[in-house]
Structures are given as structure tokens and as C-alpha cells.
Length: 260
Image 1: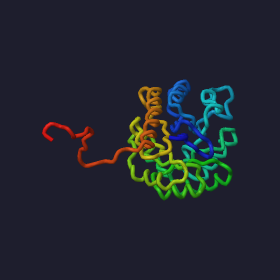
Image 2: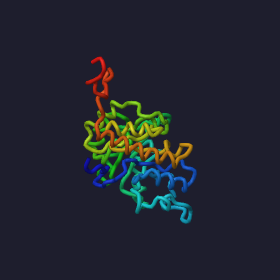
Image 3: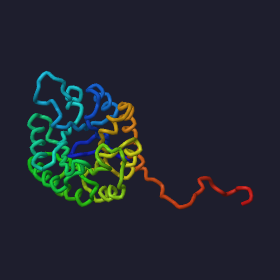
Image 4: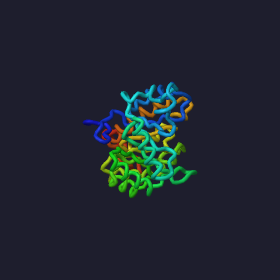
């Protein structure tokens, strides 16, 4: 079916699964789970890293070397455009990357994004040479505005962060995929492998998750399950599912049956 790689900002990846690095028991579990996931892009919370400070202490990049992974710093915990912009700049200054998963949270309880501030921050960071992947609501209008602001991909939520509810609005995600000219990566809300497969079956270009893997009883096993689910969902999307019908359609021919 041709080249089936995920392409973001001109870079091609064999894996369409992106994973976070928080909530694991230790760095060894982080390493093993991410290796099992097959992910090539990993997100790192700039505010929670030990990069550029406290020399000699364990460093996440020791187990996830940038020579092997694309490090995607994120602005988790930022509630204003100014804070997110400053945090992104800090990540670049300490040598993480000029890529950023941009998060501007608008509500502390739901952790839903502040799309107005998100669009503003995207415009500014794109002008400064960042590759911006914004985390946003499953809102087709917001996604179009982010794309127009120069986002390298749009990352609509499937459900609230860490909820594990699975995709709550399939139709919105289908609309976003239909009109987007940049990759659509479903971010947040995935709980298990079937959620990831469903996201891919409706045409998402990728899925990003953290809690669904790190919070599982067996994170390494769940990471492998997610890898397989993303692959299966993508292949099913490319293969083209059969139409849904109200009534049964026999799969065996009826010619030659007794009594016919």
C-alpha cells in the first residue's frame, strides 16, 4: 500500500504511536515500556526533567537517547500563552529540541485546553522557528485555526487527559481528519488497545498516549498491545471496511442448495 510512514515536519517515522514518559515507577520501566511500544517520538515534560541542572543525578535522556528517539518537549502545566511560550523556549535553550508539544490548559479540573491562548502561542512559536504540535479540543474550527497558524500537526483529544474513557466524539475527529492538511494525532483519553485501533480506523495519522500505558498493571505488556493496535487500526483503515447494513448478507452462495 505504498509508503505508510508518519511524516511530521518533513521527518518520516515507521511508528504511528507516540508515547509520554511520565507516571512510570522508575527509569528502567520507562525504557522497557517505550522499547516495547516501538515508538520513535517520545514526549518529555520540560518542567519535570533534570536536564541542564543537578549534574550527576539520573537523567531521562540517559535511557531515551536523542540519537534513537525524537524528543518532543511539552509545556504541561502551563495555563497561559506566556508561560507556554517561555517553557518552550527553555526547552530549546537547554538543548532538548525546537519541536514542542504545545499545551495551554484552560481549566484545572477537566484539563481542557484554552484554545484562544493555544492559537496565540502557536503563531508566536512558529514565527520563532519552532515545530509546533498543539494539544487541543476535538473542535474542527480550532484545529483549522491552528493549522492556519502554522502547526505542524494537530492533536485533538479523544477524551479528558488520563480519563481512559476512549474516543467520545468520533464524528468530530472524522471531520477534523477530512479537512486537515497536516497530520491528525489523537491525544488523550485512550484507555486500552481497542481505543487506539479505533482512532486509527477512522483515519487518524497517529495516537499519543501516556497514562494508558504507564498506569496499566503491566505497562510493558500494554505498550506492546498499543503498538499492535495502532498497526492493526492503520491497516484496517487502508484496507477499507465493508459497509454497515441493517440486515444479514450470506457469505456463502445459495445456488445449488436443496429446496432452491
